[in-house]
Image (cartoon, rainbow, N blue to C red):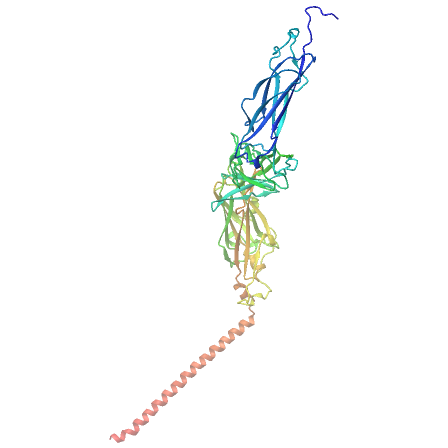
Length: 597
């Protein structure tokens, strides 16, 4: 086809070729001591061009641009160019090569010591509408670049590492272990102790004291882990306070964001093979509320070495511990068996049952008041019967101080016979004690060995649990149980003993709408022991046989008669001697009377 003026001809297409060479193209930074002195690299870039059609052979002016760490998004490059990174070159003809040189400087204390450093050169026509020399018949023909050809040429500086494999590839074996701890100071040293665990999960108890998240990173049987760091993501319930390391290294440390929920810890560059790093993230628990049941901390290890690493969730339960303790007091702690022995049907008032015994339980709250979120209860295992169903401790009355007045339950276990107000209910059928006994155990006045027994609810006593709510407990409370020891049962069933111990146990429990409230086991259980001395006077008198009494009286009478006889005999002898003496004196006077005449 003929060209109809104005006629246009196709523009020439120019293909630019470039090469880039760096000397040296690999370096061992540690061996060359590049962190102490400056290390340089020499570079040379060469360019040629070809055109289509081949008859197009003008002089071309091109632009070139060098770039170090090409394609890397870094805040600080590892190498810098000495001089300008841009320039212009004139290519005189096709296939005529022209070169330019440049110089690179390796910066000291670079972070990425593992990945190679890419260096690139990019070329373009200086001005596509102008040429340096174009013939008259080509003056209207302006070349364009070949769009299918890359305009950038890249080469790399390889960083050699002794801690990597022979192929200069580092395959690390990082492992992360964690545990939640408490911190204490001993001899100016920080001591970390693992928190109590519940079913394998740590339990956090919110308080004014900080907790520590201990993180240990190991690199066993692996190559060096370059740019090893840990990212810790905290929930809103805990706050970052500080970090403590077990070693002091320049390239180890942590930084946190503004609200303290994201922490970035550098653990070594590199973290050498067969080494480990332990550090403690100190956390405050002021953000934990009663609605918080668990704390999840996300842990992520990262390295530029070759290793796939999974996220780790560090979890801990949240339990608000209430510091309650209970102590028992008994008044009196020792009693003797009384003289009144009446069966149940014969008793008309509580005073006739037996000695009065008062149990006092004091509850102390060392933590926060319970008024708003929890209720505590005092649970008493009350031994009201012995093993055969006879009365043992009769509960007369209960009163409390320091808490709201709420009746203890079951209510019908308090004064069940209504002895204070009279008989309001029929008595239960029980065996009544008898004073007579066919046993001969009471014959021994001074036993050769003291016999005793301990009675507990776990050893067969008939016990009932008395539950006393401690509503509104602030700091202290007092629950007093007034009771009577049942004389008849003791005299009937335990007469062979010298004394008896009766143990009453009381414990604390909690009830709350929140699942994360527990009782701190300072002293949640207490025991009080009542000692009963079993007197034998009545039983001894009833067991002495009549003939023994008769013989005793007869012996006493015989002794009395013998004594009287001795006294009488003594008076008779003394009177006779006195009479004989008077007679002898009269005879002597009669004989001496004539001589005087």
